Image (cartoon, rainbow, N blue to C red):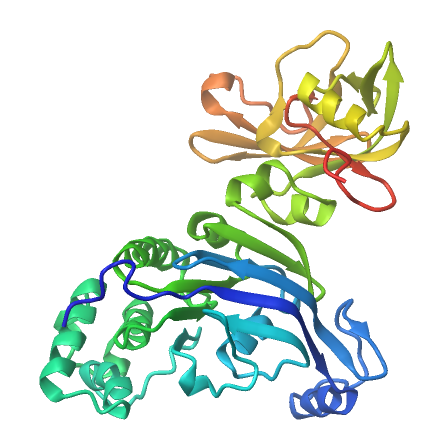
Amino acid sequence: MQFLEKGDIMATISLQHIQKIYPNAAVQERRRKRGEDPNKKRNNLKVTEEGVVAVDDFNLEIADKEFIVFVGPSGCGKSTTLRMVAGLEDITRGDLYIDGVRMNDIEPKDRDIAMVFQNYALYPHMTVRQNLEFPLELRKVPKEQMNKQVDEAAEILGITEYLDRKPKALSGGQRQRVAIGRAIVREPKVLLMDEPLSNLDAKLRNQMRAEIIKLRQRIDSTFIYVTHDQTEAMTLGDRIVIMKDGEIQQIGTPQEVFNKPVNTFVAGFIGMPQMNFYDGKLIKEDDKYVIEVLGAKIVPTEDKQARLRERNTPECDITVGARPEHISLKETEGAMIEGAVDVSEMMGSSVHLHLNAGGHDSIIIVPTLDLGDETPKIGEVIRFTFAPNVVHMFDKESKKNLEYI
């Protein structure tokens, strides 16, 4: 069997005003079974007379063969949304379309969707080959064709030598490859992956991320991938959907959400180490916007000035955001901030400096080439400033980025 050539199948997905509400009684019963306090509020999800709103007004158009990543903290609704696409959760309100066909009431087995779970979900009494054959047997695929499909999937995933082994004889990474193989062997239109790498150690996660990128080039499916790991999201996704408390915060390419976060949540969630935040003011001097922060003045670049003027942004209190890699130790007249080094982490090509600046904890990433042999010592006071082309300004009240509201 040959995997279909690109363009042979289509899989556009449209989620329109999707909402998922769990009745209060159902939520409480689920918590009782887990031994939890049924009345404890665990997050900021909305609670209405109908129940707990796990996903609220979710709207997304996914192109054919696109790789979409849902990312966010635990309990934000990303896995629930994925399960609604799969048909494993009922949709309370809204419409789900795959290739223009409404799927709300279509059984999971009839959606031409395959799903990979974080716990592998392999049959322990079956060999790897039998696990891969199982979905094809259910479809009554002829034996000769089945063998070809299984052999090709095994070759793509590098598990040919394990076909006669049982899952217990495999490592975690090998088991996950088998789980992915069982999903792709029947060539689904849509491949759903629910935190598939979360049970692997750091080295294996890196290897499997690369394998998934390669796999994406070889099979003809639309991908929806769920993770709480922003590194996975940034490296895998064509676009990222960032969620919080059941709602979409931002949709964009990895570069867009990194460079142009729409609010402080996205800014703090995307990027490692996370963005530094400071209390500041946005003022006007000589018809230019100026940021006052920690006793220094930063003049944003002309493109930022233009966006602020376009929105007629008033003088106001702001939250100033600066990524650790965008903070500079180079002297700039009239715009330096002082901070005492609390921790110095040698990372090889760079040093991560943890500072206390004006009562704020800050992290600065400095290339070791810039430091030479003069790595700052614990307690040493150093001077730094923010790169004016990548400094971020967020409204103090709404938390929104002043350049994009």
